[in-house]
Image (cartoon, rainbow over all chains, first blue to last red; front, side, top):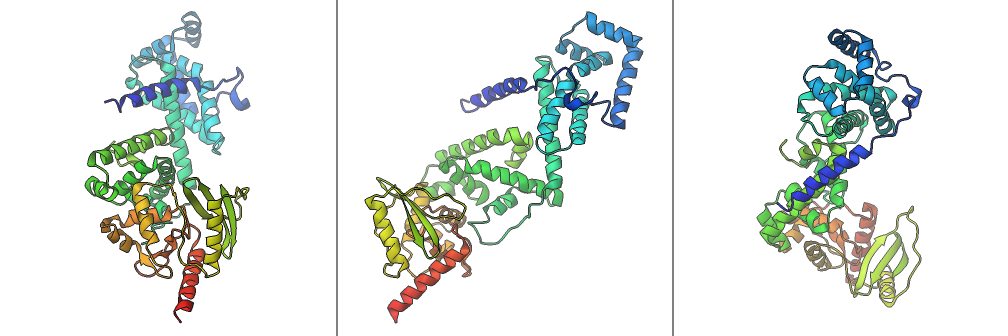
Length: 279
Length: 157
């Protein structure tokens, strides 16, 4: 158990760090934009109109919502719990509170990686759609880290989709060139899908994986490669390296733990899949 | 402790510490050249490399201290046993280590050899006779094998 504990601690630290990552947004709209949702296309306008209509139906007038907002400065958490119970006006208030900072985050992360403003706006919308879709998974606690975790996942998904479209890495596999084709071999070993698009994305992930593997301590790397890439049993690895079975087990376990830690922030839940773990 | 040697197939950088030679590697064009820090061990290596390239030397007599796992060092020791002018396959090395299944791991260890030429990883080729890979580039591997065949041939006839 002592091996698992630091990971839990690390996740908690990650959440805290993530909350601190929220961009400082000036009062005026980011990038000189107006309301990003309102300017992000027909679908977004429809979504907002639907939410506003629903809120107005429930609470009578728009003035009532504004008044309620002024008079009852509810906490984010209380608002979201109200939304879970069906109060759409509470959702709109949260939307107003967070729209600037969420859009600024999406724009900074995605446009900084060469994605377009449209893609940032789509991702921004995706955050609020996910918020609605997964509203029942919020069980109290701090709302701000939660919404930014959702935002971060939406950005990662957007980046993956964008890079998948742009990836042009050639998938090659020569037969006996062990020294130069490790990348291709790793790609093959970790790829379970014949779809060309999926394969390109896999190739990119495999490159990330190879870089992460290169950062492992050499004994960990050796045991992991023998197990995952050469298909050797722990017993065989033990015999080849002159090491005990339990040491091999520990090395491979720790190698995977370290890889997971390195890849999680980049690949999100796909990191586990890439490491051949069950979802 | 460092030194550089201008070989017929490009510049070679040598690194060493008190325990022995750490690395002998080809310097690619875009790599900045390090300042030489002469020492007896580096000087020995420079002299022996010079003899090797001029066809006067077939084996090296140097103190080596490459960093690697125990398995990698085992593979590198096997490589040192491949005679000058000869070649062998990855499978041969794996079998000599008593485990044919380790063939891929042997390939990786061969590719990770930090002491080029002195530990002759260039003498390992595919079982079908193709050159397969070489960290310094296949053209260098071909040159080294041709050079050794030529020198060995001259000695025979």
